[in-house]
Image (tube, rainbow, N blue to C red):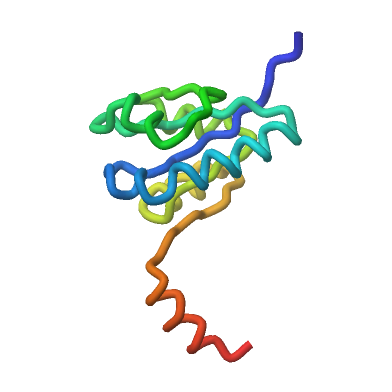
Length: 117
């Protein structure tokens, strides 16, 4: 059996961040993982319980690993990273990644009105 490459997710280190983005991120990650035969691994923050992370998704198609983020990033084929310090760390390590960020609807409307394209 061929070993799968890793798709690592860094959903944030605060409960509010995880509650806002995790469901959408894991849904997208599962589509990518299925298409490219990847294993999803969540780089869990030490201060966030695994049960809390899992409470935002019905899926169990991922592993949660704490305390080994840099090693996960070094060995990952791809990463999905919440905007913040972790994006800089991921870039320095050299792992290809997608940045995710969720804003309020009002902020979206203001930004859209400023975009002239």
